[in-house]
Amino acid sequence: MVNYKDLGLVNTREMFKRAVAGGYAIPAFNFNTMEQMQAIVQAAVETKSPVIMQVSKGARNYANASILRYMAEGAVAYAKELGCEHPEIVLHLDHGDSFELCKDCIDMGFSSVMIDGSHLPYEENIALAKKVVDYAHQFDVTVEAELGVLAGVEDEVSAAESHYTKPEEVIDFATRTGCDSLAISIGTSHGAHKFTPEQCTLVNGVLVPPPLAFDILAEIEKKLPGFPIVLHGSSSVPMDEVNTINQYGGKLDAAIGIPEDQLRKASKSAVCKINIDSDSRLAMTAAIRKHLAEHPGDFDPRQYLKPARENMKKMYIHKIVNVLGSDGKLAIQ
Ligand code: 13P
Image 1 (cartoon, rainbow, N blue to C red):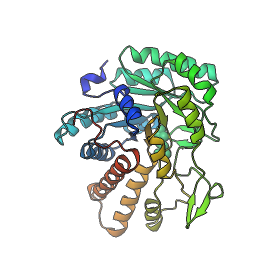
Image 2: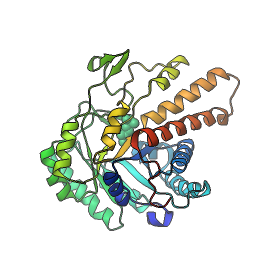
Image 3: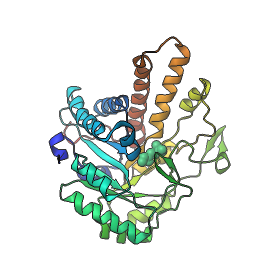
């Protein structure tokens, strides 16, 4: 059993309080490779931003749970080495699907966990979330729970249809579970194919998806003033990365994400954590495909992973500075 405080990590409580009050959102970037971890830390240090590094069940299966935990511990040391004396790094479990998985992560040093019972009947979702909260809070680990269902596929999480969060349920849910933050469904979804072209409107040659349900977000904020709200499925699926992938042999048809102005608007509300995974995958794949197409003789992974890392870092910095607004928001600069 190791407590996250001994690893130099922080939970989400204070950073969310500041983010809600300050009208910005903390980036929650998924990682499962060393290059993603390095790029996230470099971006957070250069922009002086708090950051949530999140690990899904699929990432643990891919990379090994212990390795990812040690990478997060390494991330704190790396941030300090890069000159950030007081980094604020959260190690978060993304989409925990059982009490046992959440407990395992808490026991191995995670500072925050998500228990995703959103697919369960309402009372079962509450009972499961409360069980995780009761365990997590003994160790000052913060808990994110979810109400409403997001469509899309992400690692082992998938749902065919989305169901918007019902504002009339949020007070009861937050009170009875004791969760620290609430993930809601207002029109985002997981993956790189969030909308079909038929759902979009063509504006100046660009397919613009339907707007997020800001009316539902406003109603939720009214019911739970100041309560931290989380948006999953918030990749923007940048067209330049998709075009690069397709130009160099890829085949990503009709990849459409959430426009960044929608996320900018959400960041200014009680939304204080925005989850981004697919954009990192796209940035990495685009850079690798381009490099290998232009340098067919290269076979040392460092030759193509270096530009991939650079491209991800550029994307992370862009999100922090231009979309979420969390730059310069470390408690101690
Ligand atoms: P994207 O697929 O939009 O990046 O969403 C990631 C996410 O929500 C992780 O939980």
